[in-house]
Each structure stands twice: as structure tokens, then as C-alpha cells.
Length: 610
Image (cartoon, rainbow, N blue to C red; front, side, top):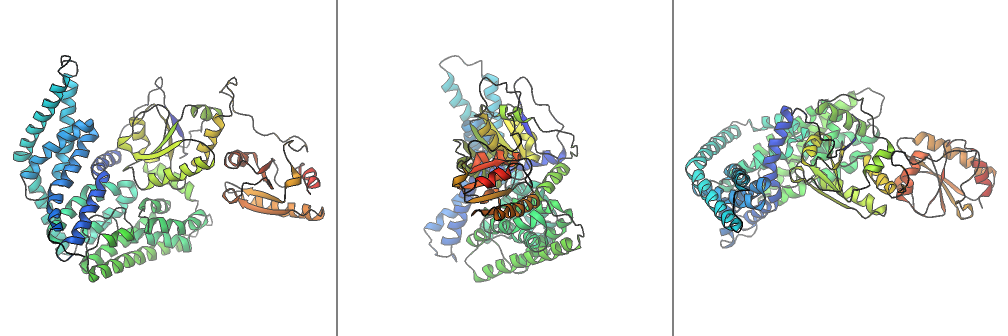
């Protein structure tokens, strides 16, 4: 499936598509995780206070340890509730949701995370419906009085409902789940949970599983036992590290080349999404991550390893930060992550070694193919927009937002990558990231999101310019965005926007008038978009030309990111690569030719060299 630019205007409303089961599950999971993710800092603070100051902690302090119980019983549930209400009805909804949650908190003796996830959105929804119903019925001058009393009364009534009804139901359900989890742990069946967790992670349900399910249950267990293994089921970096290590040693093409850097980002940065496309490239690798997850959890269970709170992001550094102060727990963490890595690596290595295909692993192509499979769309008939239409559609863009499931992790890194490209191109443009649930339909907005979230982005921002990519961390579309932003300023006001800017034309042997070949001491052929072979051969032929002409000029073959922006550099490029070059480098001299191997311009160029 091709990545496409999706534009929508008021006169062309977005067509509604039938929402599948997977999309509904993702949306529900996102709602849960979006209540927790913005408050992860508070969870980490609670975990650190617990690990440091509780009895048996790093530096026990009875006075400071008094913060532990109030934080887990009041602060964390109220933050979740406020966020849930705020998602539906702004600050006012958050206040009502927090008031309503006090009922379930006071009516129960266990941390009410599940109750907060119910009462927070319920409070926001109720006050929103109330405000909509009376919007045109309040007399002028009484708005503040009605708003304040309605929020207070609504919050009070919901708090009472929570105390007598929701609280006992949630407490009973939580107790039943806790008993079930404890039984699974007791009979050593917990590792089987990874049979479902690992594939679900790779289908972008990782935040929903960890923040929506495992974190509330884990905190409930950790508040009494001091630690919980549930915090390790999803964040364990071992399975992903094993996959990437196997690709680094036995992979092919771009997948092999990119795996080492991906390992660093995954293992130390905690961005697990970076290894998902590698698994999706070869579905047999689901067996590898399952083997790694089951092995890691089994080891953690056997060695009684757990964490004080959820590690976010799921990096090896955060795992140790959230660990109790116990040598046995530290050793157990190392052993568990190591064995998970080995198990995943062994299975992945077998899969890759048994793959007898001669084609290289094209990571970008595989990402597109697997995204189409995940979305249930295998139609490749869609054609990209015309160049001039794309450029014209960028003319009003004044800020770019990356939107992902939780608004953290991969979208933050994608925004950072594009922000750097935009800055280097000399474009003054804001590039930020957010959760897709917080996306707003603002004028001048370009939304960049993953393919599987494109429909939700269309719903949240129907009139924004939208770009769907396969992978935030390695999409070639970022360079095209920069090209379009630069090109929009080069289209004259009196030129019809329906016509694309004319491409460079190869005509006879004339050299561009702006070339100053007296300054050139190095000629570079740029390999771009997989044309390494052509550029290498062209480099060899040009070396022969320069040598025969007795010119003191070096000839090289470099990637587009390896150039230095100096006027002593002459870059020989195809028209396609030249568009990208001119937006990223302002000083280098560029000779555009349709024939890299034997251009009629070469004789004049070599003759004019110093």
C-alpha cells in the first residue's frame, strides 16, 4: 500500500468507513492508555518514593514514607480521573470526573485505578451532555452561577453513585482479577500471558495492554507486596533486542543496516515500536517474540523478580530504576532480560537463516505491505497526487503535528527527525507531537500519523492536510514534506497551481550558467533511493575521464546525507535527487543530468575544471 497524502476540505467531507473490530479495540485501548500516559511522571514519582524511602528501601525514612499510601490511594486515581474527564469535556469535565471518583476511592480499601477510569470519563460525559442540553436556556448574567452549581451538583451525585454502586462492583471485580492473577502466578502459568501480549504489542496495542490493564493490577499488587511482576510483562526489552540482534547478524539489505542503531534506541531509549516493522516483515518472527516473552516472564517468575512501579519508557535503565533495592532482584532482572533476548534471537536466527530468498529485506517496502495487511486493504490502485497539487496543498501549512496512539515514544522521535530536517532546510515551522485523541482540527495544520491510525486522524482533523506513513522512525516521506514546503515558496503567484514546476531538461551539452568550475576540487555522484549501482559505475567512469584529462579533482560516490555544504563540491545528480539536494544544501554546486553514465555535458565540464 502506498503512503498517500490525504487532504480534506469543507466542500469535500471525509467519507466514513466501517470501523472494524481491531479499530474498535484500538480505540478502547487508546482511551484507557490516554488516561494513564499523561500522568506517567506521577507513577514514576510514586515508584521512586516507594523504592527509596519505604522500610527496606535504598534510604529508609519513616516520615517521607508517609507519602506512599496517600499517593497511591488518592493522587494517582484522581489524576487518572481528571485526565479522563478532561478528554471528553475539557477542564470542567476533569473536575467533575475527579469529584465523582472520590466516591469510589472512599468506598473502597484498594487503589481505585479501574474505578477512576470509569468515573472520570463518566463525569466528563455527564457534564458535557448537561451543558449541551441547557446551552441556549440560561439567561444572560446567570451563566457562571449555573455552571458552577451544575458542576458541583453533578459531581456530588456521581460521587454518591460511585460510593454505593460503582465502587463495590469495581472492588469486587478487582478482587476477583487479583485472585485470578495470583492463582496464575502460583501455578506458574503467567508466562503463557506473553503468547497473547507479544503479538498484541506489535499490532500497536502495547500502550492499551500495559497502561490500561497491567499497570492498574500491578500497582494494586505492589501496594501490598512491595513489587509486582506484572510491570515486567510488556516492558521487557529482551524479545525485541533478540529480533534486532538477529537482523544485525543474519538480515539483508536495509533491515540489516538499520538494526544496530535500532537496538540502541530500543534497549536504552525504550522505544519498542522501532522493532515492530522487523517482525511484521516476516510474520514467522511472531514465534521469536513469543518465545522471548515467555522465557523472560518464566525467569522473572522463577527468580521472584518484580518492580515497584511501571517503567516508562520500557528501557533497561528504567527497569533498574524501578527495581527494589535488592541484589537478587537486580540479578534476576539481568538474567531474565538476557534469557529473553537469547530465546528471541535463537528463533529469529533460525527463521532468517532458513529464508532462502535472494531478495534483500527492504524494510520500507515491508512496512507498507504489512500495514496494508493490518488494515485489511490490499488495493494498490491508488495513484499519488500530482506534484503541483501536493505543492499547492502545502501553501497554507504553518505547523506540523505527529499524532500517535499515546502521543509519546515513536511520535516524539518522528517529530524530532522531521524538526531537524526542517531546520536544516531553513524553514521556520513548528513540528510537535501529541496523542491522536488530543488532535484538534486547526487551520494550517499538517497531521502526520501511522497508516493504521489514518482513519482516526481523519475523524479528529477532517479539514487538515494529512500524511499517513508506515513508520515514524524511517519514512522517506519526510524528505518529500521538506521538498513540498520549500517548493510552495517557489511557485509564483501568477502561475496556475494546477501545473507542476517544470523539471530540469537535458538539452545538448550546455552547462548551467551558474556553475563556477574553477572552485571545484571534488566531484560527487549521489546515490539516492537505491541507485547505488548506477552511481558507483558513474563514479568509476568519471575517474577515468578526470585522470585522462590530468585534472587534480577527486571523484567520490556518497549518500545524500554524507555531503558537506561547500561551493568547492560539484554534485552530479539525477533530476529526482536534485529536488531533494536543493532543499537541504545551499552552497554545493549541482549538475543535473538524465544520464549519469555518459552525459554529453561531461566533456565540457571536465575541460573547464582547474
